[in-house]
Length: 331
Image (tube, rainbow, N blue to C red; front, side, top):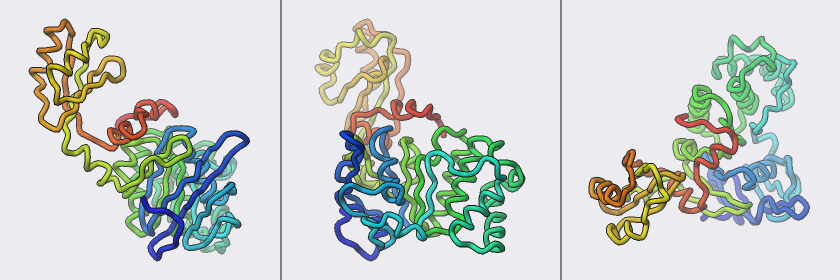
């Protein structure tokens, strides 16, 4: 894992031993990582893992208790706002003004970054078109749908064309279509050279978008690597999910004896997970279960994913993370 103790020419964000506590609760516990320039880096973990606290320290909204951090080559450890001119921030909840319309909100944000009137008006119009909000530009922000609000909030975060963009849960709780649109926009920003740091609890989103990811649990980074390297150990393995009517009747010991090369676990109360380096003999497995009096309702092969890696490393199921914020499937 790359640490943040020394500055390198291609490093955009450098964190070393960063820690933050609130009373007796340690929110972030001595984490270290580096994000390269132009990289799309994902911070993945459940609620309470320390994602938002970390992003608040990186964006100057919270001062670390210990450790150091640099953004864009600027030491922000003692002066959290030293790199404010380089960064755009999209918080978990919108910080725009409900009584202003979309156009005026963007112009106001541009003014905060010192943009002149003509420049910010031109930029606001460009962003409304880019984010599919041209017709909504004259409507009050309070009247926007949740997906539209997220899009305008992201537009506000990049109104001054920052080289570094921080996003906290950019697609949390919004509809599938809006989520896809936002991912597409972030992909375009990434391809244009913007360094993107995003937190998310959607594992499939991180796999789809990010160059590298870090898993954070209990304030500590438990794994950090490129998505390709994280997936490499599981790509050569086959997984079959067998749905049964009554898992309490499954004799795992008997199964293990009959199929010693398989890793067998029971998931979600009614699914037997079978993992193997060799092709799984589904027919033989189903016959064995039925001979034991277990009713099999479905058997399907699963594509290995970053979710499998995350569950293996952290012990936290992806479904648990989705339920935390009423997450969607199939987005």
